[in-house]
Amino acid sequence: MLAVVESSTEITGPQREVISIYDDHFATPLSRPEYFIDVYRCVEVDVGECYSGQFGYPVPKTTEEIEIVVPDITNKDRDSSSKKKFYKYVVYNHTSCTCGTFTYRESTLYKNITNNEVSEADYKANCTKNPVNLIRVCNVCDSAQPRYKLHPNHFDAVVAFKYLAYQQCLPGCVVVKNETSNKQTSLMSGRSVSVPRTSDILCKAYDGAKTQGKNRPQKLKSSSSEAPVGNSSDQEPNYEILVYIASGKVILAAVLLSLVLFTILIMDFTLCRRKKGFLYALISCKSNDADNFCQRCSERNIRNEITV
Image (cartoon, rainbow, N blue to C red; front, side, top):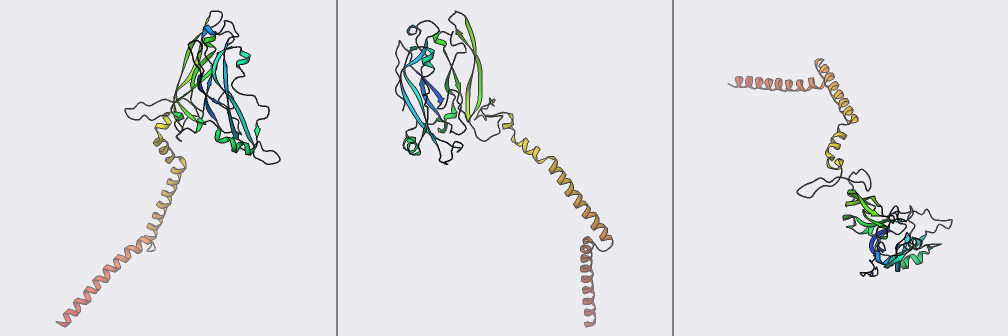
């Protein structure tokens, strides 16, 4: 449970952000599970509360520690003892903000731990205390998540523009639509600088449909009812099936089969003319039946005449 953050007219309170527990770039180590949580970060401080100069940054006044324990999911970290390993990560949640220096600010989100390995017993005892992993929330892909990044020229940017807000779909979700806009920012020198920002506008859960790539922007198809989402290849699956059916190997097999059947018919017709084929036998059988029927009729007539 995140602590209630402070907010007042003098100091702008911490802002909600979704982060990876591992680093500030939504990255996940190969041997760890994906893990994303809600935190609050100091990104805004009232201009009147932060003195002028390049050293003024929004920093936390009070914080709380969020502990997360995770297993090694690939077994790549196992040593000669062959024991599965477990790790602890600590993220700071900012509960109130003030004005500080950049040196202090950059060390206030992830706690540095010299050895973050924990025992299996510690993992089992504390894993139930882990915060909610947003990657496992069913509707997390319904919207983009709030994110913040430092201004490219944050040393010279005024305090109100030290951080730039944007939105990002959670890794594992598909980006349906995004847009790039230019944010006008002010520097200490009085100059105005335009900084491009790309934000995800619409996300969706991956449904197994063919896409151009993970987290790649795709166009929406407008519709009066529920609109299907995806690129053009998603909207025309039947064409792919037809192309597959009409592939070279299938056509070749059909041609060969036709040639075999045609050859069998020609050979049987030839043998029929020689009174050896299946077709001749079939016709002959019918002819014999007719002859036998006629013969039986003649014999019956002769017997009738003798009786009379």
